[in-house]
Image (tube, rainbow, N blue to C red; front, side):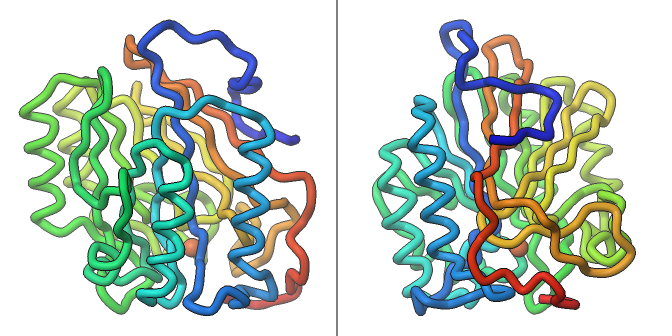
Length: 278
Ligand SMILES: [Fe+2]
């Protein structure tokens, strides 16, 4: 097991009562066809290996967050499969769409017990705001007026500690090619965040790599995909030599966040390392 985040060994840490233990899974890129591949990798097989690795480590889970690019071909079959897998965790699952999803298809077909595509959810001392940053037909993202209003309302109506989740990165992660596909209007987002001190973190997917930064006291986090990784700090697309993984978050009753990225032990089978794009 490798970890490239500042916190480590969350699974052996004792947390105060009321701590929420959260698993983030992102960029699963499943297909209608279970043998579908992305850059040579069978995404379902890679996802199942990631889940097995998580289960092997027995971290008791309170909540699961799925942050987009759940189904690469946005197929009803892919969403049905994803719903089955997510509901098997037997905890509440909050989902949002990525650029490869079709939000309406996701809401229609990603249905199972405990699996939700709602925008605002509460759990314990925490509020989760699941924003839709998809621009239909485009790879980049934007927070439309209704999403900014949803965030504003969510923050104005509760003083719970809040974790804001979206698919696209709201700040550059340092890779020129993928930062052209970031949230194109981050300013109104951070204007809202700056007015509500109970915002504790922002969490996203899309970049297929670990990223950590701070905006004042707000922790900013991105996470590896469950299939193919993108190399950090590159001008153009480059596959990374890192295995797939997931992120654990311990959301404490006092509003602090501990978080760790965990990767499986092996590179995914069939990975086309020299690929120039996806
Ligand atoms: Fe993705």
